[in-house]
Image (spheres, chains in turn purple, blue):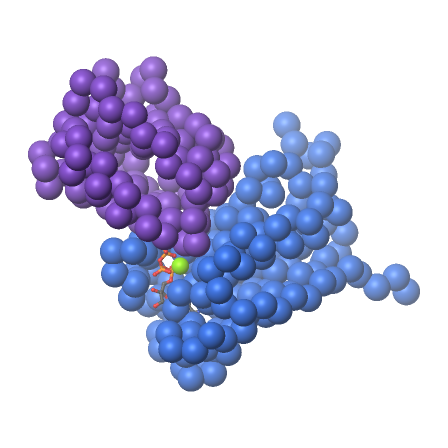
Length: 108
Length: 146
Ligand SMILES: Nc1ncnc2c1ncn2[C@@H]1O[C@H](COP(=O)(O)OP(=O)(O)OP(=O)(O)O)[C@@H](O)[C@H]1O
Ligand SMILES: [Mg+2]
């Protein structure tokens, strides 16, 4: 998995590319923590349109991002998940604690 | 009598083999001509079972993971993921959604995902001996899809 990021007007977007499994997720949280410390965003968007595969390791990562942002009084949400990651997200029920949707409809 | 197809793999419980196991199963399942969604469910379930063996089964040694694939009948794939690791004391409790011994690196959703993505799933485990997960998924004929 590769992570690309963009920051604009209080909003940090994390673009996750490739396959997010237990192997691919290693060291990701360190990198994401650094980005959050550096930019101190109000919102953090986890953008999944280029993520081909995700399992429960991705759920743990997304929950950690959600928790970090909450601790800082910010918000996190998930955008543009393809069908396989979306099925895993639905099965996990994380959409009950944070928003999951397409970028045009999630939050403006 | 024509014997049904099968394949067996064994590999060390290293995290880089999680993607390898998914690819093995995807290649084997191709003979049943699954849809992208069916293949996604199968790959996700294999990833969960193999990751469990990598993460939980062998805390202090580099053990082996055994992956066995079979075609049952005309249209069903059976997947067995086995380890000879530390085993699970209470399987029923381990299978509860959100139960984890893995702290906040894990979500405790692995068994729940396997159970909901596969038609059948059975876990057998003996403490000190190891764990085996057997799961089946029927691939629907294309004319059954609406
Ligand atoms: N092969 C195994 N060997 C030993 N213990 C296991 C094995 N598989 C699962 N377990 C135990 O069962 C628990 C639940 O497994 P499950 O896959 O549902 O969640 P998890 O692995 O903890 O988290 P997640 O799968 O969401 O990353 C694990 O935390 C672990 O204690
Ligand atoms: Mg697991």
